[in-house]
Length: 175
Image 1 (spheres, rainbow, N blue to C red):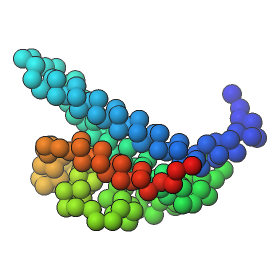
Image 2: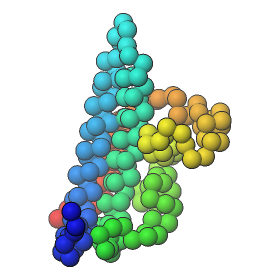
Image 3: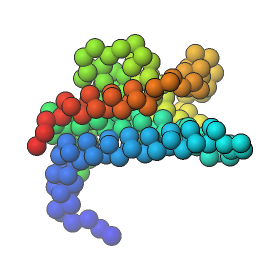
Image 4: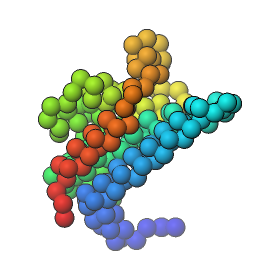
């Protein structure tokens, strides 16, 4: 199917609306929370399927990372809708790359705690690990401190993630 000449402008209008990004952030957060609840159910099961449990684990972090990413992009697009052009995101619009979390969130949210910085670094890895079987940089799998961070979950990580997403979304002007 070929596109019509009006499709890029419709896409630009849709993508320039910060509400589009806010809704996407909320959807990914809801999926992450659902996966964590399922993982908690499986944790207490007498016999659990390893693949279901590990799938929930990796996928929950992946969706959490996408929730944070789309939340900060909602802020940036609300400030500069021209980031979206010709049916896509303008090349170079995100200086640290489109999937980084720690640097852009640090620039947008005042007073990140050490725990939040740690969590953002962890989630930044899950952007890639949740999407690809093997990371582009093999050193990621041999760095002991990184692997410890990836394997361990804090007591209230999903609560921290939700609060961070909400802090980011609070920076998006209401229509």
